[in-house]
Length: 407
Image 1 (cartoon, rainbow, N blue to C red):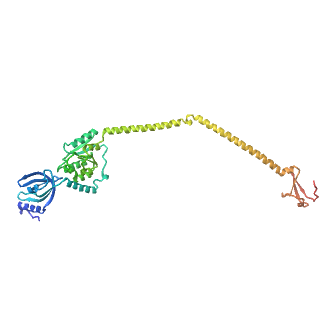
Image 2 (cartoon, rainbow, N blue to C red):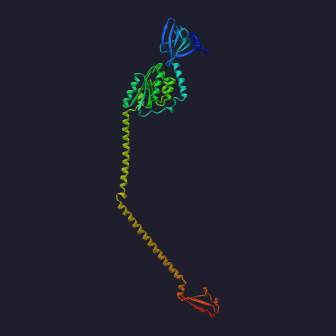
Image 3 (cartoon, rainbow, N blue to C red):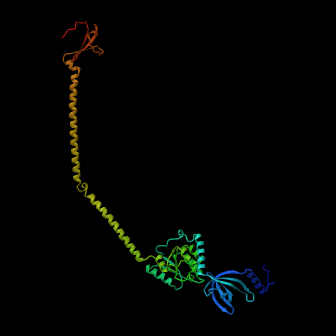
């Protein structure tokens, strides 16, 4: 428990250091991952610095020579190792160090296994999903470039980009691209370029190297920083066969820095050729359309109705005259036949008419109410009768019956 102190009741330095040593001693033994640096041997002890593979953090390690020599293969400067250590705090000097109890080199296979587990974790979170990747702008106004200092990757990107489009502009961030400072510097440069509104695309470029040299570009913090960028990111790390996790998180992967320049900046020559081809295609399409329309217009103009409009009117007038004559003949024939039929009907009517009988000398005897008297027996003496002749009527009265005489 913390002791209460005051200006009147301070505690000695030795007491404070002893308390610190007690707290550190409670950690016991632990396994620590890191890179070896500043390896020296004096007498029966080997002194080294164990450096964090990502952050700029390191700690001193003392190792008995027997433990060091028992490690196969023996670690060298820059080797990645896992060390079983006991944290110690030296009260007399007020310094902290690890005492190594066992050293195990970290092989490529184990590193690959760790990277595979990290890859699966990040993929499950959706950081590598295709639907979150953005398309690159056709012609970015300003390109951000993160690369090593005076590196071949920088020259490849700049030279190939300016050869393709001389007016392209770059904002270059030169950082460490390997070693313990690489992850921090690349992440900071990425944040600066992403915050710059003029930068439309960011290229992270590094030339080829060993598997260990490219490990910073598979660091989890850097991969997450790339996935959260507002600006599209192009990864151009190593060569075609290299595939750090940064390639999966970036919006576009380029096999080399030169390939990155080709993907980010269009070739002005190719674009001019494309424009020329499109212009020629447009001209051919317009010319073909005009030729088809002119052919249609010529065909329409060559029609008789347009070539000689008066002739068509005359032809139609002739047809009207023919139709009129045909109608007249048809109507005349119909009238003639109707007249003949009417004459025949009139003749039959005259022949069957009672007037024709009256003209032959006969007469019709009727009662005053119009009833026709057909027999003499139907007439009584004194009946008033009307005698109808062909030209007039005569009123008479019956005065008796006489004998019927044969003609």
